[in-house]
Each structure stands twice: as C-alpha cells, then as structure tokens.
Image (cartoon, rainbow, N blue to C red; front, side, top):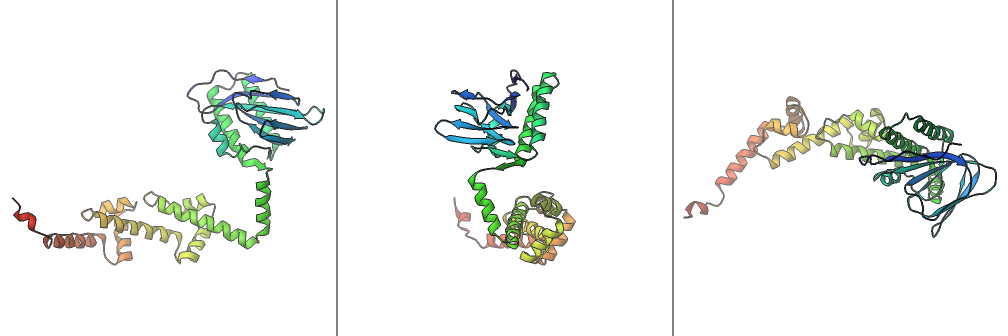
Length: 305
C-alpha cells in the first residue's frame, strides 16, 4: 500500500493541480465535513458502498471509479472484510470541477473503467515519481489532466440512462443507426463549412473532423446536393463573396477574394463560371446603378441655404 502523499502548496497560477495521491487497504471512512478537493476513488478489489447524507448510497465494485466533490459529507463502508485495495487522487484548482464535469466524471455514481489495471499503474507511478522528487507541481498538473481525459474515454456509466440509450440503440435497425449517424456527421460538416468558409479549410480536414473519409463525405454531399463537398464549399464561398460585394459596392476584387479565403485569379474564374460574369464587371455594374440612382434621387438639398 502507498501511504497518503500530499504534494505541497500549489502555484496559484495552476488551474488544475494534484493535491494528494495514495492507495490503502479497503476500510471504513467517515468524513462528516467532506474533503477539501475533488477525490477520485479507484477500487481495485473488494466491494463497498459510498453514502452521501441526503443524496443516497452507491455500491462500488472492483474496477470502478467514484468521484466525490469537495466539501460533501460522505462515508465508505466495505461490504466484507476481504481487505480490498482502494486508490485515491485528490485534485484541486479553479478549473478542476469544470474539467471533471466536461469529461463526464461528475455523474453521481460509479463509473466502470476499461483497462482498469493501466489506470491503477498510472496512479502508483504518480505516487512513486512524487516520492522520488522527480515530478514538479507543473508537470503533475499536465499528468493529471491527461489522466482525466483518458478516464473519460474509458468510462462506462452504470446509470439507468445508459441502459435506456442502449435499449434504444438495440431497437434501431443497423440501417437506421447508420442513417442517424450519417445525418449528424453531415450536419456538422455543413456547419463547419459555414463557420470557416473564410479560413483555409480543406475538405479532408472537414472529413476528419466528422469522422469520415473524403470519399464517404463526398457521397453524402452527392446524395443531398448533387455536388461534391469541394464544390459545395466553393459555391458557398462565392455566394458569400457576392453578398459581401452587394454590401460593399466600392470594394475591390482582391478584397472580395480575400474575404472568402480564395486566391484572386482563381476567384475571378470561379465567380464567372458561377454567376456568368467576372466580379470586376459586376462591381462596375453596381457602381453604375448606384450613380444612376443617386442622380435621379431627390435634389431638394441642392437648394437649401
């Protein structure tokens, strides 16, 4: 067993820091005032129950993680005297709660960790590196952040909500699940294009962001719009350029091209192909229309004193 190990006074600039770490033989714990920071408990063997007054009680089994928020009164009672192993990590900092919540680790109740032994080994490695004086506070902050992210990827919640989602997933046919997934991916791809049409965004990066190959994403665009993803993005940029020119009739062609992230000569060629005339001619046409409109407008102001 690894004795309770404090890490010392944290640097005030650290939004997330390691407060303590250790392992112990499973035993009764009673903290009527809670703990000063977030606690991540890992039960390696044995079985027990966490009780939180006014909230409830949760059974925790070997291979599971239980996260307790700071200042929350609680107690832990082993179910037997098998002397199981319980590991713990204390995490503090202004960002600790936000990071744990975003990672999905603050759901009140146990979370099962796949490849539990790897996480147990990482906890003991953190303890040994601290005890040997090999890890500074700033480095341990990075290590803890990565540990939280990895735990998030490997957790399987044991709540009823998960069982309901799994039941719903089982009730869908394979084609329905694939269709639902494709709709979500396609919607996100289109949203990314509309958000970043001014940036140097490549279709392959859009595909990577939604978890598809370029070929598969192109098939989805063909099914819905009859064009490739690249053609869709190009048309979007040209439409945005036309809208921008309409609002800025005295702007230059170069400015219009730069506004939508396109090289000038390429922009001119594609613009003519899309709208039937070059942006330069359209700019001249719009200026002429504005001048004609101004010349035929009210002239009463010319006679004001």
